[in-house]
Length: 276
Image (cartoon, rainbow, N blue to C red; front, top):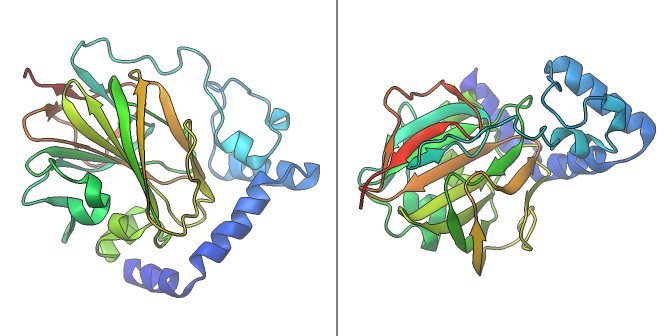
């Protein structure tokens, strides 16, 4: 079934379908907005008890509903002074060492940090990574794992394969093939990558700083010098996808016992900075 699903995605007009979905998701037509929101909330059993807006009729579009803000205090940050926190709500897909420049995608599949991050990949061999999958019902804003300054971003055009477990197991180099935004930060623990990966029907990846919004037509490298605090929002997915965090050798130790399949929430400890 995984192989059949992967083959089907290869022949589908991925970008065309995503553009159509994006227009529908951004529509403020009352009948379409209401239909999409209510059907989606019912299908995925969306819990709004933690959201700032708890009435489905108060959202002005499906995108407004999908990227809903949470109530203040709904995601408390870890109090450990060395904590590296989860950037998003989701499920750990894979995590572990970056060995010989390779990151594990799924059993039998790996890909290189260079194919994922291009010119922003320097300095991460021998480090650690964590991949978090955001399901449709999850909170879809992305936050910063620790205090850091945004230094560079690389917008990478690509394909838009689904990023669920079936596709991860069937398509080699999936995350390095999909459209993505690579963000390189500088922190007390050294450089850090936070990579937002697009997927089928993901109409856009938005950031809180000015810059390109997907779909990307060509690779675009931008330089910045913007400070962010731990837990501060940096972007959001208009429909769900994946976030990958990478850290250099000897800078971060991932939490003992954290494993693929674990559900995480933004603000909880993923790892801890090592003393320099």
